Amino acid sequence: NVYYFHTNTRCVTCRTVESEAKMNVEELFGDDVQFAAVNLDEKAGEAKGKELGVNSQSLVVIKGDKKIELTTQGFMYSRTNPEKFREIMKEKIQPLL
Image (tube, rainbow, N blue to C red; front, side):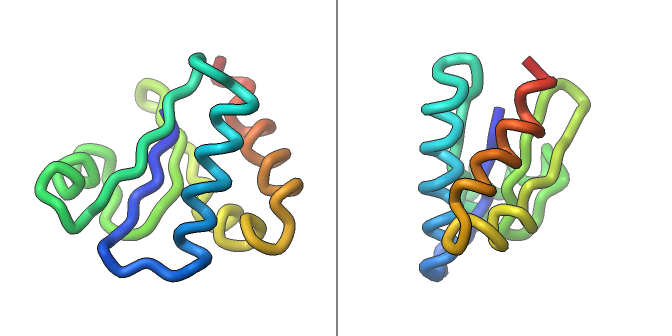
């Protein structure tokens, strides 16, 4: 699963990280990988964040007890170099399948 954790207050880059990550997951992996956006300002989102050890805006890949952080790459490349962001996501997620 790929989770994008966010809060109620979101900038253009925050929204772009979510939309690009979601599109990449759907196009690269179809039904093999699930994408979920989780609002940390809502009770369910706060609970999910605690469960996965996330308390701020984050993009993470979870498989079993394995957790891969993609937050930095998402914020660095989703707007300026979406192709590179796509390749990074593919490289990090593919070995987990």
